[in-house]
Length: 577
Ligand code: AMP
Image (cartoon, rainbow, N blue to C red):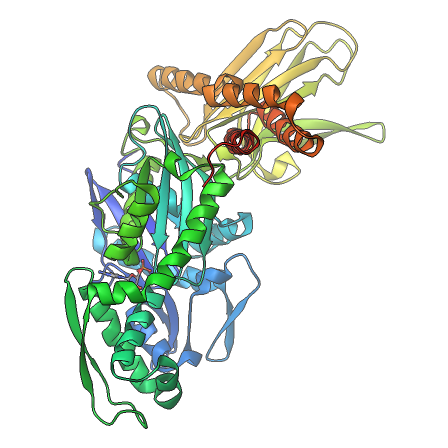
């Protein structure tokens, strides 16, 4: 498997994108044609050649003439939004495809062989349409998209935060140029799962840069607003210098910057020295704004800040000491260090890519993901008294968090029907003929009797693409099971045994998880003593949790159990943040 064509990891970012490859145990971040590891996510028209180009040259064209380019199009993924380049309108998928095609070409160049498989990262809050749009863009660029991976998951993997015994809760804080994202994740048995996300789409390193520029102007006796009105060009120059000083102050205690002459305000340029405490004081309002999403993410996960055991920071702006200090004071936990915050996501994507390609053992790394296609069986429907074959009945729906185990009851359609041949398919069409057949499971020994004899079918699906289909004849309890691989045809006995063992664990009763057991007992104990409206709230959450337990929807179960725990804490008067 490892010898097949390489699978690269792609961080398809709002401002910059990057590509990496897991090569013989080490991660190589692949340079673009200009030798840079970050490719600006900008598409522009090269007027000399009439071609649409990407990267730094495109960024320069766009900066000089915004009509000739488009940027920040990741924000339009999954929407109908159009971007106009030299009068022609383009959708976000098309622009992303142009960018991905260039990344693919550069990666092929760097690796010296054709590249057509990839893993692409997306924000954890991306919905189905946005994820689908990302896959589409990848396909248009000529890629087979092996997996869509959440950015915080990728960052956590890059830091090795998925490793360790037992369970833990971690926080991924991503402060990029213009966005701030916070994600609470659960880790258990090497698996990572997104619990909650929060953020602000208009808060990032650029605001800190403007803040440094404003402070320098203040020292020169001018306000930012005055300068912007009177001499916007000089402000652009000043912001460029403020960016350099800001970065310098992440290392040094002080630094200088020259405030340029400002038309109608200051005749002469002036040199200003700023210290780290000066800028930190200026940053206070921005730092305060970082607290809100941190609190919000914890609240939606039903957690207190003391529940956070591990912190991963991503994005260039987390290099600022004031940001690290804030995080440390909020959570009393030292963030993990050692991975470049600009490259953590692409490192994680490369590791995931190696995993998808079978280059590293799954036992070394397990992350949760979502099913990229629905999995189900063929069914016959009784339509107006006529039995029509060939319908697809999904059991695991597309985008369900995996690993997962789901079941569904089926019935015999004829009297004295002793067997059913379950045909297993993946795909999204209502009709099996338009989906892909994965295999078949023959169930025999159904007791004779009228139609409507029940057979329960359970699908258990893991991240390796291993699917176990198990049928239980309700009347006799007889079980027949078979393991299918979505990725390779023949499975060796060893692989099969290993897969069976793993899949068996997924089928364990989620009710027996200590956290679930405890919170159910606690909520039930509280019920008789609470006020009627509170009782109703408790019952609603309990009902939802019961439904998730029946469905074995692990993601929902964990989320609701935590929510219920927070509710019990509230009713008990327990500590909340
Ligand atoms: P990203 O979108 O992750 O590339 O983040 C870029 C942001 O990180 C920009 O606003 C940069 O100013 C900021 N950044 C990068 N390096 C540093 C640094 N050493 N100190 C402070 N901010 C930085």
